[in-house]
Length: 319
Image (cartoon, rainbow, N blue to C red; front, side, top):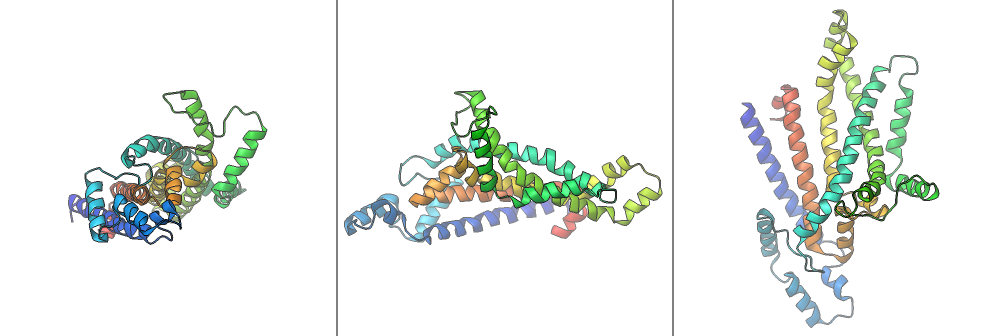
């Protein structure tokens, strides 16, 4: 199978996965306890009021028709309108996605800068005195502490100490660039801590697995320098699983940083979805979860293609 055919097959599989996820999202939203009409009108609404609300929201049509209309709208770029505010969801996403993306990409940058070198260092020092114990301890702590606990500790510390950073008080970049950056520094760091810890741990495991392979021993026997072995053998062979992990982390963060956005009062996609969930605003929930799924699938597709370029053996394994 040629590289082009293999890549096309991966793209077709990704598209089919998106469609399947769309079906699951549409069904799951409507199976949630408490419908939109129940939440919007309350228990004292009359049958006539409930029927009118159903008609206005388009929920009185057959479920298959509703799904077809939603999918056709998504394909054409129309994500629908909020049941509550009657505002186009695409417009809200256009305002909120840059905020979430800024926080997520900042966290990913810190994850790559800290996690991968820490993982390599811990693995390469495993046979020496101390055995990279410091790196393992840092990774374990970062993985163990939940986002909401770390976020709460950071909010408490910043509120108690004058460190020049703000909690809440978000300002758009156009209004106040300095305040924009200041308001997003803390949530970015809180998001990066567990991501960097997980990346460091997985990088260490990947490097350790490569170190025991025969070609590493052969390179050492030939007298190759440590830097040559790291550059030509370790990085190329250890990075595919790390890239897959980074794709998962990136997709998760871009899909919505719900807890951190709530703690730091950041008006991103995650906070928007939480509000919509409480109101049972199906259109927003569907669009938000589908966006997260598409980001996740596309990110993994890109990583598959990149990983296959680094290691051609993966094309035969995943074809």
